Length: 320
Image (tube, rainbow, N blue to C red):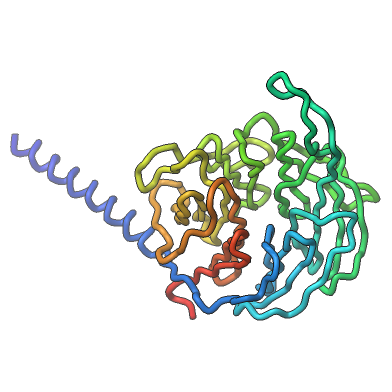
């Protein structure tokens, strides 16, 4: 009996020690504060997409097709109006070039609930490539893509989130024409025109905000390798009609998830098990709306508040 008691006590101590170590490890992740001085009155139209380059310069795409470049303090360093047939709705950056994506649309008559109505239908995607001053370098169509809700470079390949077909397409741009190298289909539950993903910290991986499924999912080589999240009312759950709407990754492999209605920005550990919240945020959007985000090399998080014509910066408390 004495031996069993000793073993039980050792086991209990071991479990407590493990929990303490795990808590300490994630407690080392930086807390964030909102930088209230960042970028006041910079954007004259509502921003719809954001990218950050290797030098931590921000590039913000506005709904009217203007790109505003600014530094990490929110000071404007330049701007240009994209030379495209209509205003682009998504953007990616690579090697000092900006890739702007315009979803081509036409008006068609469809039958809905027994009535014929006219609606805008997505028909394809045009990509314009610009340098940071706004000089147009090239323009091309993306095969097999019907729309472009989000885009990122994953290694050397361009990945595009196609909401209309509920798929993510990967393109090799090294040839004379873009070539589809892989695609992820029949995996996503989408709604409200929202479809967001980001490059993962593992080479070749992407992390998807599968909002209709209330999950964050990682895909490598087109195969789902991990996921976390569930619908619920708990702190670690995803709430409202569908969440998270956006996701970005920190350098250490942890995840930043963004929820709308109400706004909640949380940082999950590398396993998606434990999370903390960014405190001091105002409500960024109302209703079913995206909150595009990026992270710079110092770990600062930039959140697009489209309905308020601003970008919100959240800074790790250890940084100035």
